Image 1 (cartoon, protein in one colour):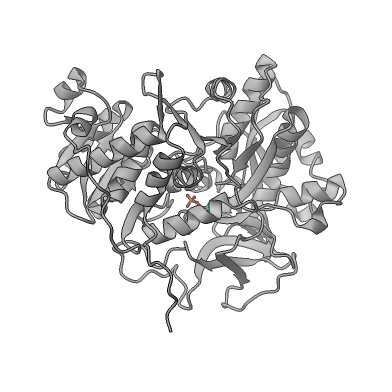
Image 2: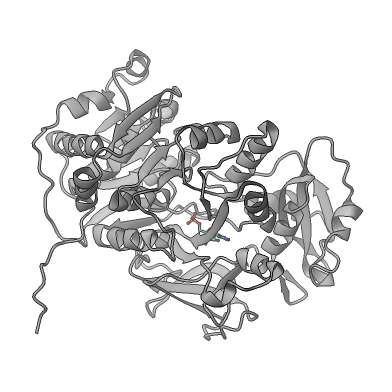
Length: 539
Ligand code: AMP
């Protein structure tokens, strides 16, 4: 017997319809590519998104066609999110920092028909123009621009497109399992792989994001997603903000500490979200200016492990909570959030700090386990390490347009490639990417733990640990550090700091001092490159 409740599909257009109807006058602040500010609201975003969907139909797009974006976090990008998905097209967000070869690959692999592009990235479109045969139209995200016309004579302008859309367009109804957006993983080896989200997975993920034990959003919040809109849909925040009617403050290209500080204080932002390096930048700007950030309640950090020094600096000096979360492109991304249980509230400061660096526990909708190399299921005792596997309502089933893929486990679990422990309460500690873990004489050494301890030092700005080849032990850890200006910290002083904090055999064999460390477009250390450059330094 079936239930007798309304069978209303979970569609992204319902999110924006809700935001427009019940939170229509809530501000959306957006920094343009020329640093000017546009102030709009949910009602306008909905109106323009509908016109966009209608205009795309007039351009000849068919249901399911992919529309690529290479853009900052701004109000037009937000309109493209809702306009494409709502109109039954697919929003394919692209990381502008991919190599030219990878950009061409993802655009062609996705069979993108339209390319929306911010003016900053015009040179990318010019460079690709003869290498994307299926793209029917490049659309500059702005008003008519002579410079762009000279560079690409067939370019269209976003504001003209909106003007050509029907004001009385109605969002169509369709199956909630229809594809809504597409993100490619920032794979360091092989081709990037596409994860094709559905309307249903996106709405269920949004419900998860807003829950109190998840990222906890409400209509009272003002969110600054500093995480790019091309990085797993800005962690789902644009959709979740519409679901709650929260304000969005979209920082455009202004991602340096000083710009973020200005935005947070000028617009009274309550929640920020991004990778740790961004918050190191904000911290530096705060310290330099002596400014405070009284409106900011919490910062969501994920993408890479969050060092305790960062958590302590924000809490102790600025009364901002850091909410540590873990996720992947393949998990939409929220998979774990570090929210305490009642038993943790009376812990000592030391115990709380030890908890804070963990990636957290799964919200409802995600299940987790760890497995050994032979596929055996390992104990959740907080000590045994294995590969983290997940399943859930918003976890990838198959990569887009790829036949069989070995990373997808056969029994309905997704193998993440992360090495982790899980304790009895389901709290996960990610110790490494499987390919980054250092295997020294048969023992595993966590590069993340060693990096976090190094970054905790006041005079160390950035740190990376790699496994360097070793004749006797196969691999030994080598630490690369970027020192603060004027620091004369020595190798011996840095290594002495590890004594008593990690097992003796974990202490790196060498410290190399470098000017800068390579980070990818989503903030991750490019360890492959570091291994190529320094992997032989102990031979
Ligand atoms: P991406 O799909 O580009 O977002 O990358 C996902 C990967 O980022 C995960 O598999 C982890 O290796 C890493 N990651 C994400 N969040 C965290 C975190 N909080 N701590 C450690 N690693 C993380």
